[in-house]
Image 1 (cartoon, rainbow, N blue to C red):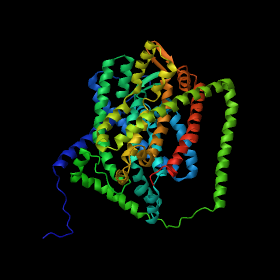
Image 2: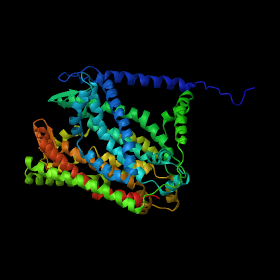
Image 3: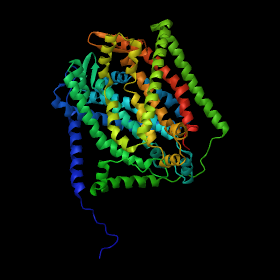
Image 4: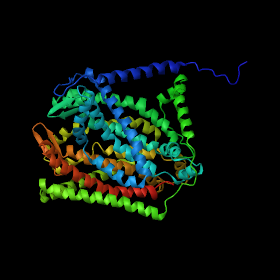
Length: 570
């Protein structure tokens, strides 16, 4: 007779016999690629890159590993930065504008500044260059993810907040048990978008110019850069085909299981009839040993969360006098620093530029700002209805998700030469027809955020809408627009920032001996960079940051506040 307290160790089943070797092989492959990234290297040496398609699988693994490392770093940064900005109103007034500035700084600007520092940390090894590439991809991913989590934390439904107070959750438990799970759907979709958007910059990031020399690390990006330099259309075709395969596999093996797993975090009281499905997740659910291994750290984490005592329910609040004193001190210090920086700029700028040139740069910024606004508006008119339609159909979402990820991952700069040829052939206006190039890569932020917001709509609200016979504009007004509005604002902000960033490469495009230059701040920065006039580069980036901050403060942030207080489902 068996005792009830005896524990029978589960025997592996057929799924375990397949899953365990695959997991071990994946770890072995990652370890081998990581070891190959630390080969000896000195500045001046050349890393052999071949356009032979036989090397593409290895290059693809190198690039994917860098991008996964960048995503992990982005998630860690996002958890800390967005939480602090959402929880502390003083930190919010500094961190959110700072996030606007960081988003507006060109990706290649980060790369040119940091690559020498990373190489100095690891002399004689290629790992410094590898880390610089990871950092460049990190800067292309993290701002979108941070905005997404910040939006989720600041739009928490009131009933969830009341439940947290009723159960006396402390700050740690409240974050991990309530706030982060509520924000997971939006953060997940933005993480997928960031992963795909990183492909746009990896072409430039994997072929870096240091001290007048080009340093290329093995990867799809450096392969594409070499193919473009050689005008090898066949190699570009093989690179695009490889990207399609890679995106399909990491969607099937990684993102689709996460989407199906994260569906349980949707804020609803009745579930949808159609749920996201994943063959990979279902397969691992049927394992025995693998699930047991996963349950161990989960149980330890749950125990650690419970060790923290609950909230007392009587949190001390500052008196109005203390609050006024703190506000006065904070704004006083902030104002002093602002006036000091303004005075310093007033003394430094006349040494390098005339005020007429500064005014001209602000005019160029206004031209680019008008382009960005019109492009974001046009993208919203196109992609919001499409995104809502996709997000409301889980089966369609699962089918189209890899396609949308590929479109977002496709390096739009491969299309720039085609646009140059069309403009020259048909004698088109450069200032008008170059503009769409700015939004090619960043428009997908709007689509991804709208799809994610529509997919996260509570099933009980959709059932209520069907019961009341809502359709047409009334359905959009009462349910769809309030439901997707926070996600749309997040996507529009990141799309706007991406368009500003892309203006530097989109307002000056070349093919062969033909170069087209549009009027705008991006062209000013690009031409100054090409001629080595770093003072003009600094002025252009500074003016661009001012425009981004001003637009975000007086337009996008007001929409954010509306999403937090008025246009929300609760």
